[in-house]
Length: 301
Image (cartoon, rainbow, N blue to C red; front, side, top):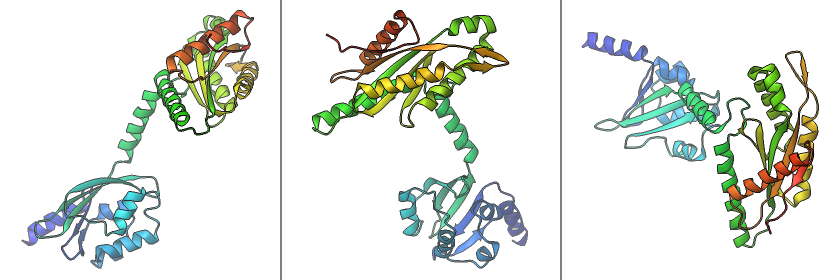
């Protein structure tokens, strides 16, 4: 029995998971080294075989649950234990994400394990980011922009039906002028760096709430919501145009480009595809008018 106990204790102390066993009287009978490390619990407290509510009280004092969603905080306030198996993730104050897995023990009590899943969550977040963002500029990609535009138009339609005050939204379609000669003369590496810088300048010129996307190639869009009329949409387009007309410096090269920008302000009944087509047509009209211009789409007749 002593040998089995020693093996069990050694196993617990060398596990990658934190382990805590709470008996039917809510006393913490087991808490291994890894649990102390993952939760920043004092060894002295845990050696004293505290009640689980004493452990929670200590954690509240340390602001342990400051980054925890309200529903989990409420669960913890109610004792943090259930008589059925359950799993949840908890973000610690230091940013690590801990997976908490609880299993009822026959006769009463709970066996709880703690796993650091921070790297897994970071990997999942990177995958989600890559699925919605352009790899070169880190701006939204075409699919994500269409999703956001669809949602914004639907929200505007609902507000109109409810007779709420409705502000307008506008989409700007931007195509670079003079980019192809740069790409041809200096290669795709320099061209890629120019596109990344273009994305940065557009993002800087736009408001924090505006959505900027790279649609592919040297085409970009800006979705602006909450505007009172076309003047605000045109003003943003001119800010973007002005920022892009400043020289770009890439690998000792001074490079000059411009942009043609078409603007479409949403009208009742507009869908995302139709709105984008109007903005795209306005952009081509700006190119035809001499490039480095802003063109506001006229309402369909």
